[in-house]
Image (tube, rainbow, N blue to C red; front, top):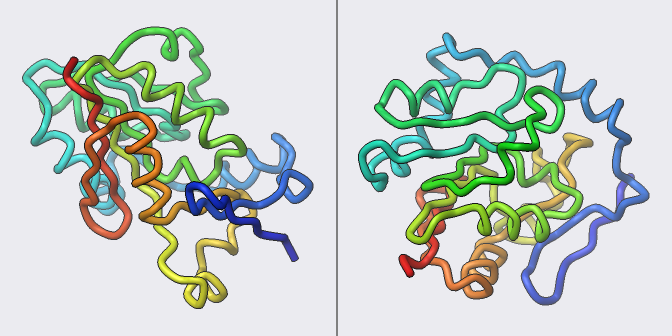
Amino acid sequence: MRDYWRCDQCALVFVPAAFHLDAVAEKEVYDQHQNQPDDPGYRKFLGRVFEPLRQRLAPEAEGLDFGCGPGPTLALMFTEAGFQCANYDLYYCHQPECLSRPYDFIVSTEVVEHLSAPGQVLAQLIGLLKPGGWLGLMTKRLTTDAAFANWHYTLDPTHISFFADNSFRWLAARYQLQLEFCGPDVVLLQKPAG
């Protein structure tokens, strides 16, 4: 049984480090994922963040799929729509140079719940955005303490950070970002234009 703590400032619920998997065990869980670019169901799932983000992008915008996984699909979807999109993943597409240049948009699906230091990583990603750039995140959001007690999302041992609406409101206020909730698991954040 894992412990869960809550941040008094941002309402993030997180698992203490003593309960985190090591990198080998974590990757073993990820290796079980069967997400492939030619899977229409997977594309439909990703469409929940792809569509609202695509509609807000200028032509030829350049982006990054942060945490693309073993079957990178979002970058392909953005490329098919006329955008350029690089891939980065700690385990499957480790290209640190992708984290040292600016982007018009960054998308990260089902990733932030796996982060042991989400504040640091999100600050890094926000720092990579050009003025007016967009950060699109997909993660299930915590609603109530009662719902959390029986939430399937906590059963995955690699899920260690659980965001509430107030977590994203706090993040938006801290970095002066425009915040949009696009459904129960999609959040868009826009950096000020200048």
